[in-house]
Image (cartoon, rainbow, N blue to C red; front, side):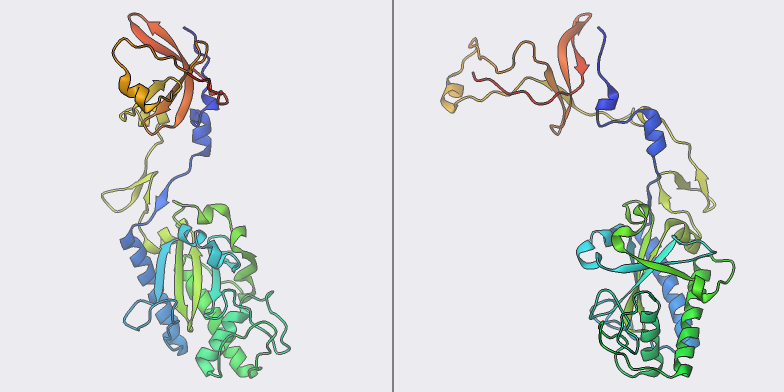
Length: 345
């Protein structure tokens, strides 16, 4: 009996297309995320001590007391799920070893999701994403009121000396952060960051589930500095392989590549219940109660209509016609067709 069933018309991909579109599933355990948060806290504390920046905490954002860590770390796909809150935020790429895309940052204030520093004339400084950081540093280092002003509200000009100290402190922060992420050489401050982009314009793999990207929220000068760190940078910081579908931890703490297995071979040891069904029929409750062995029920399933092949949870896989193989009943699988209208009893 020749089958006309076409695999490309089912939800399953053939082996070649599966291999071409396959990607490793990368994730970090809770302990690894906590280790990453602790490492980021150490970098932050070192920088704060170097520049005399007070360890202030952003209320209602991170820890409310100094006894708790100043960095929160979780999988980055959880950020994408908060598009209602962060959808309008703008992110800047941090260059590491001359390459951007491995780390993105955004500064959040308590009063405004998207921090927009204003210059002395009150004009929005959106083209200079670091200006919000400079404003926060000026307040943390020298006081003088809130670090951020709403767009259109002039910010009091600081002295050139204060501006220079804040700029040097920010440059040193980027340098320490880049070295922590694995940079081998320094870069001019102007080359550390790229222009901003919206959350929905970030590289798609960055926020996908199982990407291995980590989302860190740092208590930075009383505000929240958000970092998105990709899988490769996180693995460098932790110094250990992640839990991934394509790598497995070895005895020495290293990683060894596991060859991919054909899908059908990998799934060969699992079973699933599949059933071939006729079109359903509706019966009045009284008629159902009166049925006896030998009664005949007319079904809405015509003789030339195929059966419906479904999984245990009711998902329609394909259609089929009855047949036989040797002394056993069998079905010939067919591609799915649009639903047919049912006739009555």
